[in-house]
Length: 337
Image 1 (cartoon, rainbow, N blue to C red):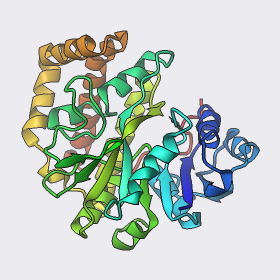
Image 2: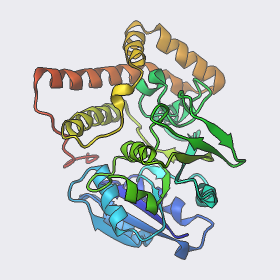
Image 3: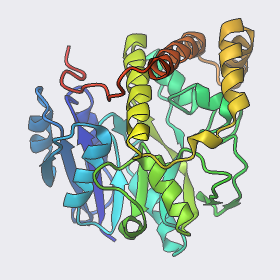
């Protein structure tokens, strides 16, 4: 089965080379996979880096968002298997692709995803924190809706997902009642799945899996491997991303382009998150639990990350309630300093 790596980019020169190097170091024949980069008009050296690495295709992403980039890249891809890898992802070892595609020997499995984020001791502390937490949004810890191993809980999700251990991977049976936010940072799936979901013009990963489950394709593999995510190195970068996340979501939800049932989230979890962040103690206890299980000074970031999330989401929601026009955050100067 030929694999198509699809990578959306926008001013990604800081991370793209190591991302591509990790793909090109896979212990699979080079003609067994292709690399498609969907660039959103980068003004830095992103495109030059992609060309120098010898990617197979570079396509334009005029709509600029990562979701639009995934859609454009998929259109240009030719593989039977699509591997969505972000420009700030690094495959942790040369066997990653072989491990991620092994579950497709089971005809029921429509997609696979790493079980964890890889923690590297030399990465910046904030990057290590998110890898240890197993999610990019601390709110998910309180709702139980996450999809990577979390050192605080000792689980890869807080939802009751039926699973069968297949040795190198877990075979999941997803449902509308137990549907973790699967679909990003190393999400690999059969091209045939696209026939049953809405993915053009925007590939909203968690919505795609929700639609797949609704269409009768609930089997997903959680592979016992990791992936590096160079998500953030500074708190102000994290704030920008949380601000982008809430404003983009509110806009596309208003435009009826989102289908994942966020309204069925554990609302008490959201309330608990707000109370815990305000009162400090529960968040500090989580930090201590995380540190006891995985000792790392990076846990000091848990409290400020929770506060930033509460502020960004609170302001975004308040803007909607007041009646501000909903629109996504502009990408024109994204990551340009």
